[in-house]
Each structure stands twice: as structure tokens, then as C-alpha cells.
Image 1 (tube, rainbow, N blue to C red):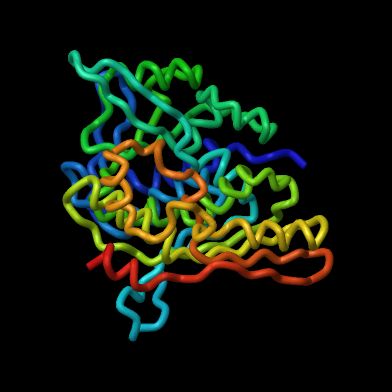
Image 2 (image 1 turned 90 degrees about the vertical axis):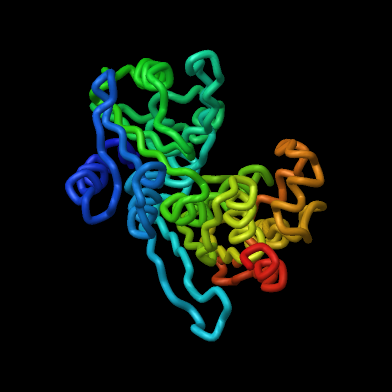
Length: 320
């Protein structure tokens, strides 16, 4: 079966954002090299719907993102839910922020992690060799978490890596602290489950389908606090279900090992943990980045295996 082009799939999604820019309160401009820049939350107000559509761009047009309501008696009843019938390509081949980008910007370094479908064309990540996937398309879309528009040097670098003229490149951006940024990061609740499964060496080809949900965290102005809340939404409030082929024992093992509570760093709001390691992100156990509660269904036997739990107390500390 031929795998879909994630960049081709997002073309209509990007066009819809541009066409509806005023209603979505986002800014669309043309950069100095002819690239299209879509501001979803820096100078533009943006909003929840802009973030929902931004998240679907991140997923390469292969996933659906909805904002839903659970128990209205709960303190944080609104949820960001993601599902995709192409979980490996959508989450790891597109949404995962794995493209490390660093360019000079008037004497200062501009460092960001790129996500979205352009990764599948331009990034040199070894992950794509494992996925057996590369995209070819006539246009590309990149998403970055940033508090300013990307500099010319970054546009040049990305366009060259994607082997496209800059005018065929769209870069969408929003800071973590914005409404749109908050939604698109919470919408990574399925992606972190896929990434953790990969880190646990579970065969990705056995993951057939997936769905996940996380509470919508309230935005906050400070970067560390905003990063903390969006991570906590998944680590302490995220719920994921994976549907897998293969042996039921392997499915049970995955369910047992996948939740965030298996990490040695589990138990504190992320902002507190980040401060404790003096801002050294890489000092944090990577196994922490996974949903709080997981169900894995073995399609061959029909058995489902569940592990982990939702920690409302830590969510309240983080979101309050």
C-alpha cells in the first residue's frame, strides 16, 4: 500500500487557514523570500480553533483533532482529543518535533524544533530510516513553537533542505503561551504514546490505530510555566488507547511500560522538575514524556490491557 504524502494532504488545510484568517484571528503575510508565514499567536490573537487546525496541520492531514467536554463537574472538563488511522506516519513522520533547527539571526542564535509535514521532506533525522518513509511534494508546511517570526536564514535553510523554492514553503508559528500553542501541544497526547512505544522498541508496524485525549490547560504568559502546563496535561492527565497486532503478551508488556508513572521523575509538576534540574531539559528522564493512563488492545485476541492513572492533584497544582 502506497503511503500518503503528508505535505500534499495539508495543502487544503493550509489554504483553509489562509482563507479564514480574519475569523480565526491569525496573521498571514509573505516573507522576504516569498514564503508564506502564518502567525497563530505572536502578534495575532489566534484562539482555540486556530490551535485545533494548527494541530491537524502538524499531523500531516492524517489525523482529526477535536475539543470536547467530559464531566462538567470536573475542574478541567475540556479535552483535546486526537485520532488517526495512520498513527505512525501522522505522529512520528509529521507531528513529532524532531527537526532541530539553528540559524544566525542578526548575531544571535535562533533555535527551534520543527514539526509538521516538512520534516518528512527536509529533516535528516534517522527516525525516517526506521519509518521507511520520505515525502515528495510540490509544497511544504513547517510548524514551529516560537515567539517571533522565523528569520530569513531559517527560511533559506528549510527551503533548501526540502529542495523547494521558498515561495512553495509555509511556516506556521505560535508560542507555547498562546491559546493556539496550548491546543496544538496538548494535541500531542497520541504522539508521545507513539514515541514512547518506539523508545521501548515495540514494533511500530504493529500499531494499527490510536486515539488519545488530554485536558486543555489554561495558557499562562511565562514560557517555563506554559511549557510546564502543556506537558503536565499529557503526563498527568493524558489518556491513550493503541490498537496493535501481534502477540497479546507484547501488548500487555507495552501497556505496563507505557504510562508516565513508570518514569523515575514522575510525581512533580513539570515546571518544578525543570527548575530542579536548572533548566537542563536533557537531564529529565525521557521516559516521563508519555500519557498518564494507557490502554492497549491486542486485535488478534481481543484482549485489552490497561495501566497508569490520571493524577488530578498534580493537574490542579500545575493549572491553578
